[in-house]
Amino acid sequence: MANSGTELEPAERGTRGFISAGAGIGLLGLNALISIPVVGWVVGGALALLGFVGIGGGTKTDRTYGTVALVAGAATILAQLHIGPLHFALGAGGLGLLAYGAFNLFKFFRGLRK
Image (cartoon, rainbow, N blue to C red):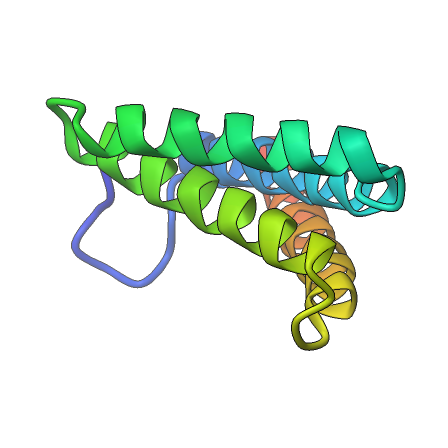
């Protein structure tokens, strides 16, 4: 668990780094897939359904990841309808998550050396 200070333990940094980088890569891949019309609808619907299932989960982590999946699914469906700059937002979000993951992984590996 997180300590009371502002500095995270190396294991927490590593976990956040891998999950964030993986989510960033996933969003970038999702952004590429939504340009294929049928695939975009199917993937968006599947993510939204997965999000609803996750929100009904018993732990806080299940609900958090369920909410993220639901938002990504809804954004994918709305991007198919060409509502707003969601295509750009998914790409920017993916790059942001990738950068956050890389930062945490850098801190993780630097913490292992100490």
